[in-house]
Length: 340
Image 1 (spheres, rainbow, N blue to C red):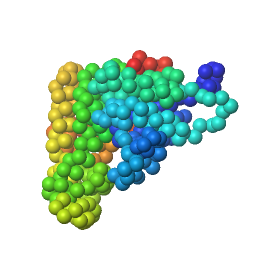
Image 2: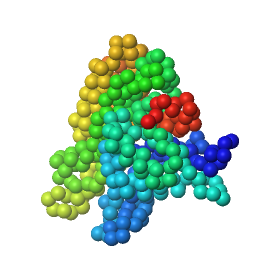
Image 3: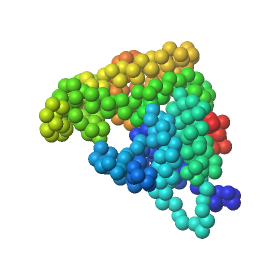
Image 4: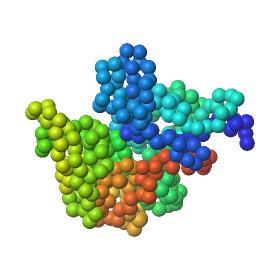
């Protein structure tokens, strides 16, 4: 063991719009919503992650909740720094006599700008990182689901997160062509909010929309194993009085149709840009779905019907990116050329 290793902690971070995951010692040790609760008057951090999420939509005038990432990139630099620092403190690292520095690998959307990259690095450095490496999300996802990215074989990965959907064709340790669109899980929630207002004259909160998406969310109106209808509580648009209605998965599929169509179009654009030899590989191997969006019922079937290609949902799609980031960190000498 080198002296530097004794005084440093290696951390892999999937800094997501909706959730942040941290991997340490080959284990996912933090899985928290990317949200911070602040005191409006003093700016003091009151809660981070799940505790702050419980306050969201219920706060009074002295408390505000902030999601520091928007569309996969940092929108509030200061709050992002507080969030990263707070989540690192959640790691149960063994107590040492000296303060440890951190070596971090953080995954980023493939369509990120240089300014946005700098913001991620600066936030991590202010939160205590001595070394910061960035890796693109689709590459991390591919590594995380067990694809050998070094092979001269084409693989298409579609990572649908909270803020962005990343589509990439990977071969020979590089991204051959990609599409990064800012349509993902948050847009699904907004579609549900809009549908409830238009069709049922009901106002609901973001947390309720997220619950609907998880419990009865679907991409197609005909499922072989449909979820049970759920009761949704909200406020009547006209009277302001609380009310309850029942929602089915078919209604959610109708509400999400436009956003899913945009993701399908991005996949088709990526396939158009793919060189013929790699297209042959993808025809044989199919498309790999990762990210929280991959859990949407029937999405694999809908994409398969559109592309006429087999679609495989990753075994643990929510954690595929952070696992890949952790593998890249563990084998940093091998994968360093993939990082920026």
